[in-house]
Length: 408
Image (cartoon, rainbow, N blue to C red; front, side, top):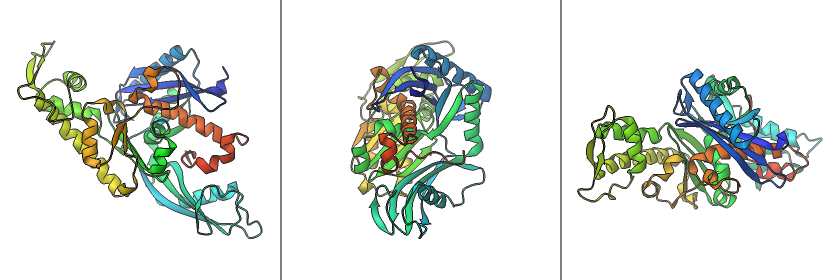
C-alpha cells in the first residue's frame, strides 16, 4: 500500500492511548485497518503529567497498531485536549487592491491573519482558525469568495488557542516515541468529523465527547462552528464520587459504575442491593442501588449543567434543531441520555463514527470516535492540499473547519 494512503490518528487520553490506522481511498472513503491501544499512565485530564511513562504508552499503542494493521507507522496526526484550550469568535477584514479587484487565495490568507490580530495570553498558541462566514462588500451568504470581484473581503472565524508548552509536551512525547507528528487537532473538531453529518451541522447540533478525564464539546449553527470548549470533568469524576460516597476502592468503584451504574436515580427498586464480594485488601460490602445511582446522577447532571451554562453564554440554543449528540466512552452509561435531555431540553442521541469501513467493533464503539475523527480530519486536510482534487476545487467552499493550525 502507498504510504501516502496510510493515515494514523493518535489520541492520548486519560484512560487509554489509542492509535487508529486507516487507508484513504481514491474515492474519498476511509477504511480502518487496525487499532492499537495501551492503558494510560502518566496522563491526567488528557494532559501529560509523567513524561517518560506517557512516552512508553504511546510506543505501546503504536506497536500494537502496527501489528494489527500489518503496517509500519512513521507519522501520526494527534488529538489534543485539556482545560487550557479556549476559543472565541472574531471577524477579519482586508481591502482588495483596486488594480486587481478579483479575490484570490492570498486575500483569504490576509483576512484570516486579520482575524488573528487579537490579544491572547503570551504562553498560548493558535491551534485552529475555523471559517464561519464570508462577506464581499457586505454581501452575506458568500460560500466561496475566490474569483469574485469586490473592494473588501470580510470573514467570521472561530479561533481556538491553548497553552504552547502543553501542546509541545504532547508533540515531544510523540517524537520521543520515534514517530513524527504531522498536525494537531482538538478532540471536539476531530470527533465531529465522523459523528455529525452535514445535515445535522446545517440544522444546528451540539456534540459532547465525554471521555475519561474531560468532556470536549462543539456547537454547529447553520453549518458553521459557533463554539467549542473543554470541561475537565469526565468519567473519572464519577468513579471518584462513587469511591468516596460508598467508601470503596477506586478499582471497585470503576467496575461498579460500568457494570451496575445508571444515571437514572429512579431506575432502582426499593430494597434493591448490590453485593460486592471480598477481594484482597477489601472486605466486601452490600450497597443500595439507589445510592449508587443518585451519586452518578448528581455528577452527570452537574457536568451537563456546566456545559450548558458555557454554551448559553455563546450560542442561541433555539438555533440548535437537530439536538445533542453524545459520544465518547461515558455516553454508553445507562440513563445518561435522559439526564442530558433534562438539562438541555433537546433531543439527545448517542452516536459513533459514521461513513467509515473496517471492523464494526471499532467504528461502532463511541470511545474510538476521537481517534477515528483524527484520521478523517487528516484525510480532508490532505485532500484540501491537492489543488487538482475535487475537494481542492471547492475546498474553500466546504472546508471552513479544515484550516491548518497557524504558528505551530
